[in-house]
Picture 1 (cartoon, rainbow, N blue to C red):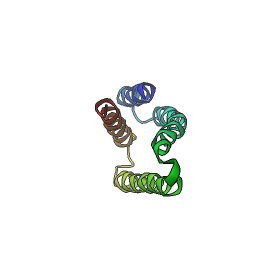
Picture 2: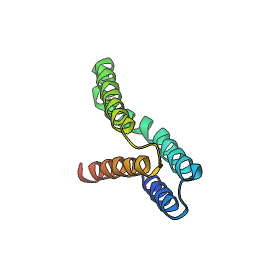
Picture 3: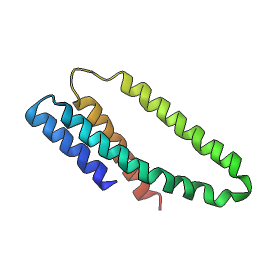
Picture 4: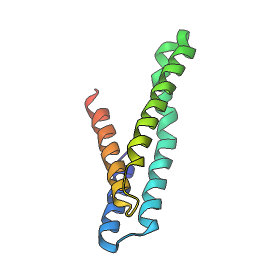
Length: 107
């Protein structure tokens, strides 16, 4: 998670200093997606572990929540300005910070 936050921060800094650049958007987003590709199966396993007797229902609920969150974030992202990558990177930074805070304070 720290790598994702740092990559988005570096992308925002690079975008602010050097202006609009595809590299400033693609590299941080690629790092975030790779980190999520590692974290998602781990979190899914932890979420489903207590419900071995109801695995189908638990899996349906977890993935329904994932699709709902994806739909809401996609809806919000569709309203962002396409002139610069900064709004999208800011959205990634806000989402990652929210996830980090939830993870930090859930225990």
